[in-house]
Length: 165
Image (cartoon, rainbow, N blue to C red; front, side, top):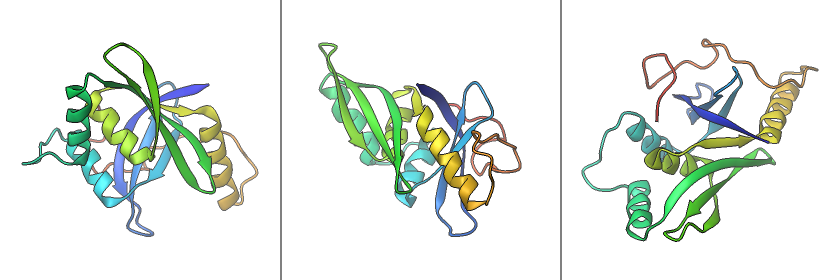
């Protein structure tokens, strides 16, 4: 089963200075932090703020290329968590309505989803596995899915509310 999420925030992990995208379940308080690269975080931040670069960045170029060739991204799925690495799949539909799937890094998939205004999904097993890994790191026995507290993940971009795409 897939869980639809939205971007709740974009911040920098104070322990290592790495950007983190916070994804929030649309129907609960579950959140999923995904550590991303600086360039990808910048691409996501620009789209959150609806700021255009002077020249197309890589994700903008990809969007323009797909549209010029009659393709659309219809959804992205954070599909797997393996060895502390998240994996994603981008679902494309061509001009004839045929679907195809591309392997992607979650950060790139999220940046493109924002440019196509399409759903971001997370496999339920990924949410559960991420929580189990977090629980082990915190020496907790509870393997329930994570519940969010606004103070746990402060917003760096946005006005403290959920970010729209």
